Length: 273
Image (cartoon, rainbow, N blue to C red; front, side):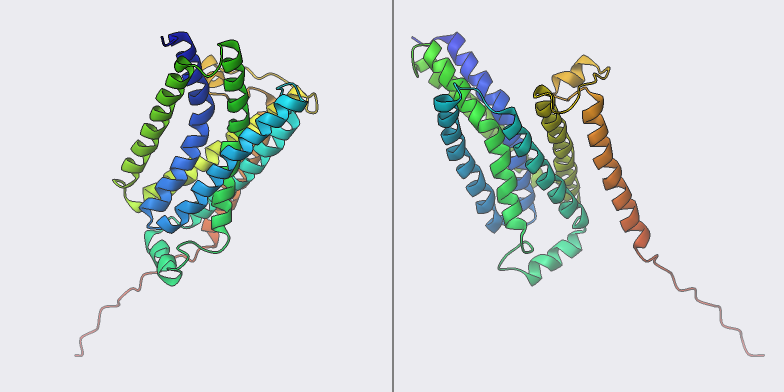
């Protein structure tokens, strides 16, 4: 008999921990498919696959040597790394939002589809996004299995249902990407990665605050915002605002350096008398 309580718990663990990583991977994959750079999908999938294996290994290490407790400092470092990569990719996509320029880049570099170095960035983002959630997911599921009599039918049914939900969401994002013009796909992916980068910065600050490495000064915030996982402290908001201001200033400077298009004014010809 299937234990519905265990099934719901296992499904909620995988959905809660996996949806954020899946959204990152799905957004990158949708951008690559829509822009015609499908050859680079293997970099994302390879990074995610290695992250899953590394997550299992990390969970084994945590369980054997740390009693199942994760290291907040390690998680903060991972969060900072993935936030840097997300902000980098966000800017990279924003600068290539022009479909004509992108198509020209693909034509010049058809054998690589994307400029040098981006494949490694894509694989790294996928790896870090999945690895950040993967270790905790394995530990939580392992603890649930021990407390519910092993990997029983209820636990496995919950995992299968959660996997189906994640794949359905992944497919929906790919479907939507093919029905949008190319420029919005670039801009939406860029904005999504930028916001996720800011969120990871807040998460890294929170992990360091839990270790008393950074001070904690609470900021009045609505419950729905806290429910989204936002760090409601002045320290986190200050770091996020600093990054946002730098990004805004860089964007303004870039547009201000662009040459202003001039239109030729045709003077009327004078009739000869």
